[in-house]
Amino acid sequence: MRTSCLRLAGSALVALFLWLVPFFAAAADVTFETAPLQIISTGGKVHKFTVELAVDNEQRSQGLMNRRHMARDHGMLFDFGVTRQVMMWMKNTYLPLDMLFIAKDGRIETIRENAVPLSEAIIDSRVPVAFVLELNAGTVNRLGIATGDVVDSQRISDLKP
Image (cartoon, rainbow, N blue to C red; front, side, top):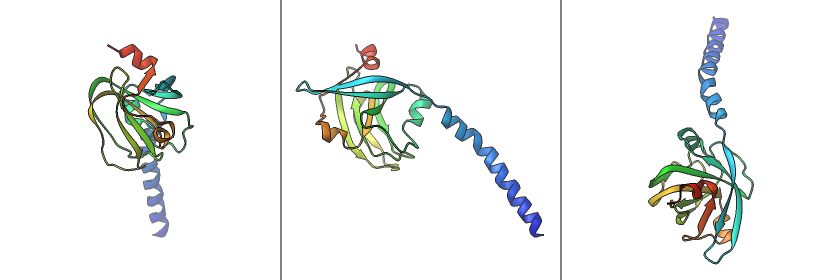
């Protein structure tokens, strides 16, 4: 009887593993191109970053989820393809983040600092935007980034009116 139960439990675990493999494989297959990006303060100071580009639904859905580290001068730029009110969350995101909500012309409209890791609370742009830039938490404060500053990258320049 005990051997049968162990075999049954083992079979159930194998079945569960085989059922979950496609989900983990799909998440692992999401890749991101990188590009240079700079933030130009209203005072003229320039801050340079290397960002991963989240430009399709799969990339935007994955974002920075399940990451444990990100270099100080790196981030992720989400391109939504349209200007609209954007709502983000931190589900499955272990890194505390600063989120910059950016208009189509590259101007920072809204900043949300220190987003709480793993939170499902909605982080709202408050206004229609075309992009969101995620940086390590504390970057906005450390560099003095503010609403009205301009984010410049080839991706944003290509879409400017």
